[in-house]
Each structure stands twice: as C-alpha cells, then as structure tokens.
Image (cartoon, rainbow, N blue to C red; front, side):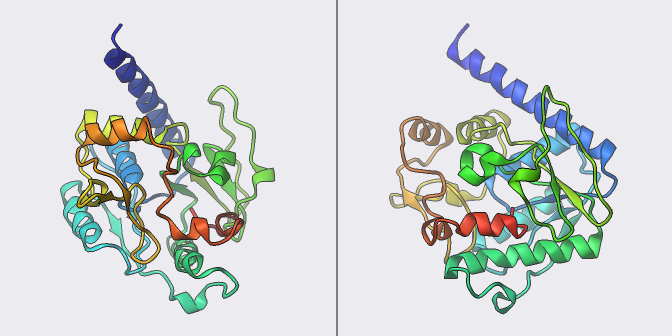
Length: 271
C-alpha cells in the first residue's frame, strides 16, 4: 500500500469519527450552535457538518465578532455564509472595558470573545456548542474531552471532565449549563491540511505565504501575526509542517504574555 493510500485511509477514519460525533450531538443536544472562527479548523468543521447532515447545517453558526478580523476574513465570511446557506449569527462582542483588567493586553482582546460567547449562550439558550479545537494545538486543550461539560458560568474545569473510553460519551447537564462538542479533537494540524487538500475546502488566503510570511493560526488584528514561511500552496504547507519545529500558535501574542494567560481564558469560558 502506498503512503498516499495510507493517508487517505487515515483521513477517512478521522472523517467518519467526526461525523459520528456530530450526529451524536444532534441527537442528544436539542439546541445546538456551531462556533465559526473563519479559520481553517472551523471551515473543516462546517464541511464535515454538511456531509453529516445531507448538505445543510440544521443549527445556527455563530461568528463572535470583535470587529478586529482581517478584511480578507470578513470577505470570506460574507461570501461563504451565503454559498453554504448558513444560518449566521454575527453579534458583536462586548467592548474591552468589560473584560478583566488584570489580564495582559493581548489576552484582554481575546477575552472579548469569552464575553461574546456568554452573551450568545444567554440570548440563544444553546445547550450544546460545536467548536473546532484540537488537542495538538495547545497544551491546555490536550486536557479536553469530545463532549465537555461547562458550568453555570460557562467555565471549564479540567478536573471535572468525564472519562471517555471506546467512543462512549457522557452527556449529562444540570439546568443552565451547556456542553462543548469537539469533533476535531483527535486531528492534527497536518491532518487538517491534508483534508483541506483532498476535499478542496476554501480558506481565507492569509494562510498562504506572501512576501515570506503567512498565518498558521488566524485571529484578530493586533494579537495575531504571520510567521516566516515561503509555503504558498497546500503541498508546500504540508511539507513545511512535516519539518518545522515552530509551534502553530507562534503568531498568537497572548501565548507569549503570561504562562497562565490561556488557562485563565479557558477557565473563564474561552474556546
């Protein structure tokens, strides 16, 4: 068997597992929403949802808008929310003055999304939120579960995560709480790019190198920066990822501000 066939078999397995998780969520949680960051992972997630549910998403898609996305990201959102027939929520996040002033500057900007998410949960009464996080992306996320319970305040606590063996998921919610659903948790960054190549999934063009720079992780202006790269095609990106030692979130300013910044954000409800 060729290495290409092995990659395809691996992607098929990941795809099947993610679709199973999405369908489980649809059956067991009645008021679902999907969080769309406009980035590569959540675009793969929408693609998988369209496969899982006969080409349509049977729940709304929420973009927590800080007003600080790159112009290319807004152009992508407006085009593909229509092309994919999404029921799009694009409520504005609360201003930075409402965030915790003890957080570092970049982390405070990111914390606006935590407040926006809390507002969306209250407004739309979601009992389940589908997100595109992966375990390999960040150490704190490695502690997550596929079905992750959140407390009354939306907070995440690693010690309260339920065991998950042999694809047996526990979904028990107290009134007023919700569950985060993570269908891409077992994927890696290279898996995502190989799947994007195979499925020809559209992306914000900032992921591809221009003038020796490209974004590996895409977020807000002022707290997300490109990394050195000459990879301007998907094949070149995959080759780069197979040899680089640079972390995926190297361009995220809040990851460099304080050792506990990301953990504090997640404990407060961040993605």
